[in-house]
Image: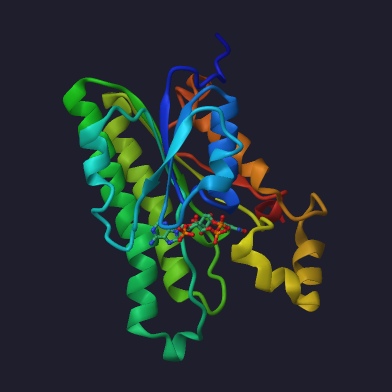
Length: 242
Ligand code: NAP
């Protein structure tokens, strides 16, 4: 079997109804996995493009929401992709915009990893986690205080979990996507000035496609990445190399 195959594996992908999560679900299905597609809204558009999978209703504003899933069935691969962003200057950033983003983008990521890890340890299984970080795991950004704090946190807990779990059979890694054409970045692409500035800085000379992230996620979840622990893989067209 190819070391890049996910045949026989069951993956849970959060935020799989659109954007990057949808592309990860499709790529993992092509690699042979059964994919549980989690989101608040239905995942019909994604399910129509995958071979084996189903929708799982999940609202990650409750960071413990995913816990029962891991008790109910074997899940071999966890992709923490769901995320939100709130914009506002630091001098007036609201507590609600801080808490909402931290709950979905960081607290739920940690406790979903914890539930996945404990289920695997109790059953004596191995597994792989791929967390979706950001360029703002490394850079400060502007007007996105809670997003930047959460994404720095995602890089940090990815490394912490790798330190604790590498020897216990769980690979924990992250992907830092660059500027990817999804709903999340629609406002930036609609602003001609910002769009031009962003494109000028990307060595690859184009915005990323969600599928660019999907294929990287398959790699990190596959046996080919078995000796990779605690990595935050930039998939950014070279942005961070500038
Ligand atoms: P998107 O198109 O806005 O999709 C966000 C996804 O998150 C949706 O599937 C959404 O599902 C889900 N989600 C949001 N709140 C949720 C909640 N409370 N419970 C469950 N699911 C929830 O965003 P995207 O661009 O694909 O981004 C996906 C991930 O990549 C995020 O973590 C984002 O921070 C990261 N990222 C994106 C870029 C980029 O350029 N696009 C760059 C770096 C990092 P519902 O529709 O059901 O709410």
